[in-house]
Length: 157
Image 1 (cartoon, rainbow, N blue to C red):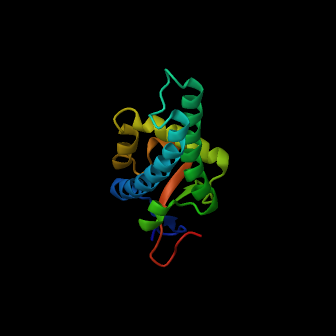
Image 2 (cartoon, one colour; image 1 turned 90 degrees about the horizontal axis):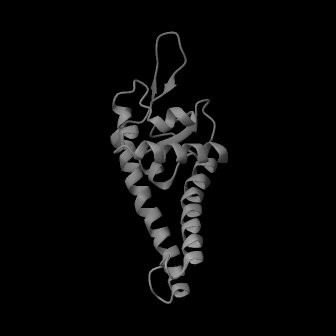
Image 3 (spheres, one colour; image 1 turned 90 degrees about the vertical axis):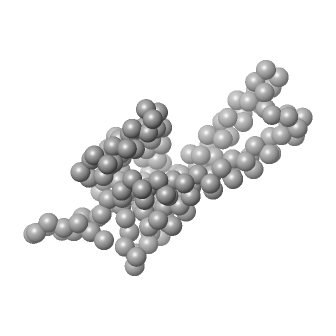
């Protein structure tokens, strides 16, 4: 699927908000399961109770660092190797740099950091897709990435 203007090469179709939200929902469920397993592994270290900063300050710091690394690793591994997470693959989406290449780890870190900021003002940075002529959210622009729709015959990987 491409957009084309007369006399130019075809451009990839940019993903809209609903398709991106669908992929985010799928990925959130998978990531939640991974984070729940990690949390379960920490329970014996806290005596079977929730990890409490008052009684286990070092364990809380370690736990939070592990969760952060799992989130970054989840997106980083998928985006740097295939350009799509499992949720994105289900919705035929691919994240790529503006030049069409796969993201690098620094690209991934920038994209995730800017995505967090795009979520903070009530998701306004994501809703921006509805106003942007290129269907780019704030974090797409700031990280110099884009999310494109793959044709039914073309899958990443």
